[in-house]
Length: 212
Image (tube, rainbow, N blue to C red; front, side, top):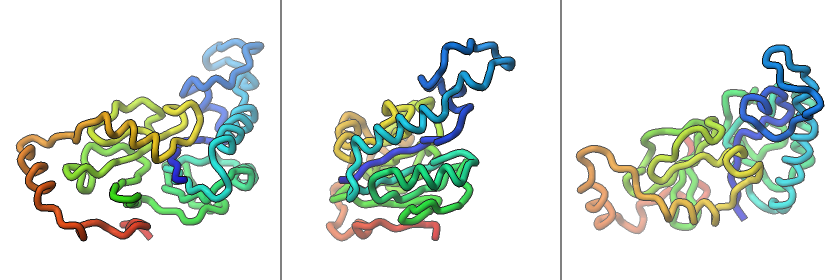
């Protein structure tokens, strides 16, 4: 099966605070800048996200991670990668160093095809993307569930999906509820292109990338 996720931020203590993640020790009250750092339990967060990942992902599954895998601790990031099921394809985020912890590849941008569905994968949410008017999906992260979805696009980050990766089937269910995001003056273009699109007008199954 194919899954998508983003913004795990393994070992990032402050992401618990910034994104109101539930991995908090209430023994230490929130005192703003004077808060005891032991309040933010990054090891518990790591363990729970690994557990939820492996509960859903089998060893032969494919996972597209759309960036911000871990934070700073490279040794710990490698250890965590070794505990995660699946073949992971990595789209770089702003916190990724470029270090490959056992990913199948690392790219800045990728265009994927699953069956008849084209998908643009990028760390950042875009307002418009390649063939958006033809129904291409756009999956992104970075916004930590803070960016309203637009057209056939939304955030697949863990903060939006209860710290689980989301399957292609689940993404399709959500996309089926959404209309193509219209560009001013281009409504007729959408209908015209759908009527005249040729069967061979799609990229290869494995996708193409603008980054090596």
